[in-house]
Length: 562
Image (cartoon, rainbow, N blue to C red):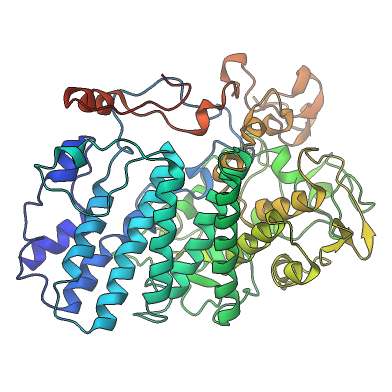
């Protein structure tokens, strides 16, 4: 019985698009049987079943979660065929599902029946509410308004089953309550550090979730008062982690992504452990000998010069007419992220679409070994790290309009002071960004974004490059136009090359010239156009709308998708 339960709890039931099924169907094993909910060990085992869904890290097999090309609809990648926005309302979808909400609610209910100390009940109730909050964040981020369920429904509860969508603010208020409860009750330590949800993990994710929601409400002009509340929650949660003294910035930036073992890393708040013969991945391989979707000119140019100034105003910048110049005198994170040699089509088996190739996730010691290729990679995968928490704090502080030098010194400037990075600290003088007492303004700045906030967003982009954050960031800032290849030409430009240096390449040079920037997506039909703000939300699948109609209820469609 326990074996069946464990297998099903790890697989977390078969996710189905049928609302009636996933909200009412009782599991076919003993999940509701009193014989299982008898001790804390079984409760812990059940909780592990949530981990693969919310903490995929580098995924498994030939999937690698959001890292690297796991998420390419952004302005960091310049692929041959850019990922397109959704064009039509889908008939069905695997993302409009409340299976995980149901599981969290079942978990929360059953915890109350287990013979444990009150402290244990409070801890595990916090864990259950944390996972429910995580799922609702994903649902709200994807669809906006959704029905909120705080208990598993009985199959006869038609009113609950076909509950109408509730405003995202109402739902996220409940999510905030769940996070606050979890932060107050989840243990500071429980299980092996870095591999188990504890209070710090809850707080770190709370800073991520409410930075997203606070800025989304602010820039989409939905509810400015709540935006402030959520940003304050994000800042508070990040500060709690910062003041705990439990974490610090790692000395080696690249080791965060290429280590066989992250055990003992002072920057890792949560990571996923990989081991040969048990759990492996393929992300390392896609940075090794495989062809790549290359980085965009826009991404490469976002890195500062080593004097802390944008390349457009730095006297140290040598231009981009060869890769050596591109990499010289730059923020050292650029060489920890990108290969210092061009990989042009037909001239490298692991060529990049733009010429710029990524090595951020490549373990150099295993790249020629069996575990360095295929799906046998064993490097541990970050789930959430202290560096992100510092960025969450800095941005929330800036958005709240209260950014002072002390805020920068305990966040962004700790990242710049990382050994091997050692950039000059970012200063704020009269509300403007400065380095070494000199105020500056990036000529390439989006003029609708304040200059100090622009630099904080730059720091986030660079520090988290290729880690899967960029699309969500552009979404919450309401800046999806950055992904339009016609509006933002530099996202469809790669490295500068001379055709004579690569006479047999099939790479397209801009304008058909003898030298110039590689244009990865050269065909008119392959361009990505941002034509409607409706894409900020995913359309509700048609089968769910009909299911509601057949039951005499109504499930409204998202704006623009009607």
